Length: 366
Image (cartoon, rainbow, N blue to C red; front, side, top):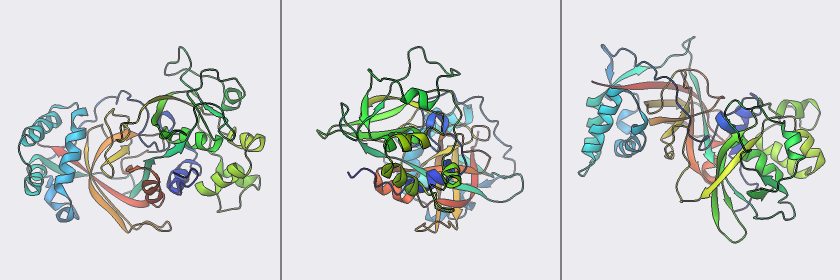
């Protein structure tokens, strides 16, 4: 893998750098999200009297219902309300035999009612996308791999406030877990997790372990204001190129504008996908990050997003997805961040997703 080739950071950084938001645990949005966190009080399901069947959803006939069913099986166990648990048990019972596409379709149509999610002004919301990046790393400090991946500080707990980024980076790192290029670590901290490939070909997963409790501050607008990047030229790739070209003190001065710092834990790479905030592995194109104030982990959601305007964008996205992750850039009842998958290809597509969005909640029938 060639490090620095992640064109897919565009959408992430449009949301992150330009909106100056911080992800849950570090990602904004997060691929993989932070380590599992309590999802908070369950959102009361809306009334379903007179609600429509899933069969009425736009594009329903084109859905891969069997793939959606398999993704539902992976994520439905995190739901806490009894109707959702009942449908999850029903799905698992069905899965004991050979499930056909028509059986999967019938499961959704008979087991759920559809309720549209609405914005305050009735306008469409926004779909963006994220992915699990992959980076080169070293076991020891070596050349341009001079920036340590640090573990959580001793005694860290949620609500703890530590030193700002500049102070942390100026300190020694005797317990470094790995060493990375400075710009790669900076982006990994934005994402909250990633996969690392070492010189000997071994791989590991880096996941969010802690943060310094400082607010996230975007660097795109300050870079534009300082004349480091041109107006309308602050894409994620443009920022990355500048950081690479100015490695060292000048780049550190810019990244220090964001005082937020993320610590990591390393685990073996099992070849799968990272877990979202709900604590279960994400499925490519079937997991979304949502606002926990409007949705609950384990919710089954239909998304329809048309008319993306970024260069190279697909015309639309539609399908059943599971609410399994979150991030503080994701706010509102019609706002979702679609997990695209792992690696450069997923990143390249994720970078083109910025589509007007409509969402429907599939409410389990008693």
